[in-house]
Image (cartoon, rainbow, N blue to C red; front, side, top):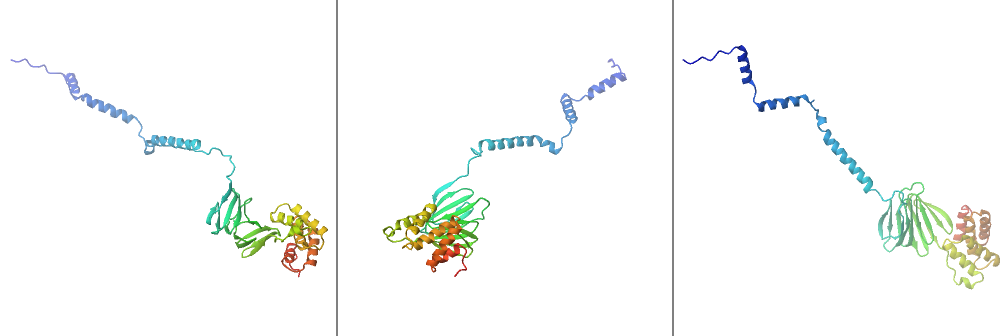
Length: 294
């Protein structure tokens, strides 16, 4: 007979059951890993983006620093750029915020241009200017052999015609400086400004060289004091001379421009007494504020 296996008691049965119920080693590893993950706090949605945002912020700082260091101007204290002696071409063209149109056969230069000032020289033809409204300290001017036209936001035309300059205003107001003094023109007005007329064989007449030299200085806007001395010398030396009209007219203008209004008035009265009619008599009345006089 076969020997019977002893009947296990309760303690032995419990140990055997527990041993058989132990999970495999791989399953145990998965259980432990899951338990460790459950011990970390769960991250919200925005917390998962923190690392990426940190990287992007760092890249932004690097880009800004590169622009500030490598792309910055060589100097921040340099003076405004100045354009000097640039020829204009026919047609419309921009000069900063302004625009000008030179006629087809015209000749003009940009004498100087900065952020605050523009100065043009018209040598031939017609120049139409559309000037933006100027701020404090800003200026825009056109120079011709006869006049200088200064503007404060306007549209105007300057045209050379022989020895004369036409100024026509379409918008705003301009100030015109000529040998006859300063004059303002407003919208719709136009005026012709001419150089002193040449006097044939001026030097051949007694005292003519003084008058010729004075008119040359006046035409170039140079040496007003010297021109006044020459004209005064002629009037004193040759009273009633051939060129008395020219000498009286231009000497009166020079005195008025110099602020010697009493002397200008005396010369004007002398001129009107001798030459009561004509363009020059009317010009002196306007210059001295006597437009209402006959």
